[in-house]
View 1 (cartoon, protein in one colour):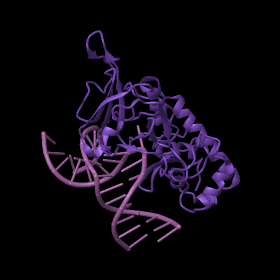
View 2 (tube, protein in one colour):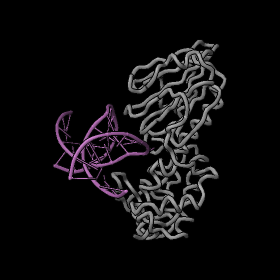
View 3 (tube, rainbow, N blue to C red):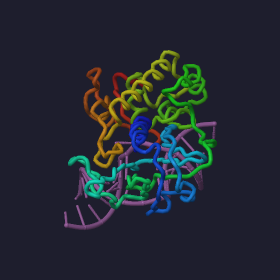
View 4 (cartoon, rainbow, N blue to C red):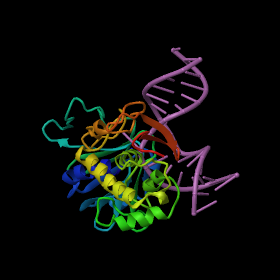
Length: 281
DNA sequence: ACCTAAACCTGGGCGC
DNA sequence: TGCGCCCAGGTTTAGG
């Protein structure tokens, strides 16, 4: 489910809650959801949280716990309440509800009794203990200086495959998924199926700027949660980026920029939306 | 090298 | 009501 802005939102939330805490126990309900020996992080103190591409990295002194949420993963933090000896549920609109629920795959408990729940309906996501961060095989971070025009142009010239496929390839560029690739191509006014190596310098410039723009918009809006089972932050709240979608999930509606209709096609097996006017083939 | 389809899973929505 | 199909924010693998 989550792309860069959603994982970044989780990262920023977790940073405030669990850095400095020590892991007391790890309970695994679905074995494929947790890879590695959990004993290697008990009892270990969390010294930092890192996001790399769509991967969340919980840092210990001598190893790391990687978390990939794939399509339906959630990380929900629950503070232990000393007063009533229960886990307080913050808001009524909290549709994650009582935890653990039927989708809870892993529970991490900290030394102060706070808990972190890893829920994942489809079981695609995973937690994995690794010694170091080599072998991640990921392209540059689009919001860092390393994502230069020169790098981007070189990357695009290597392939005549559809531009949307190329920017979603995590070995080329980190963190861009189906929603943000779709939105970025709209703002850059580029047809998603256009061969990557056929983009002009002006288009490459526009696309680089648009990718950065939509990712920053996603972060500012605390992620996108268009469907009920979709992204939640660590408190269980939805993001608001879906309110600002220009074309994604807007098939048949008017383009926000012109009178053109928004059309849906399949590209690389993924739903792809574009304005027939602004994004000419 | 490219490209597609399938696989991994579960559930919601739709047409009949 | 129910069945069958298609869809879903990701990634890997198999096969043509």
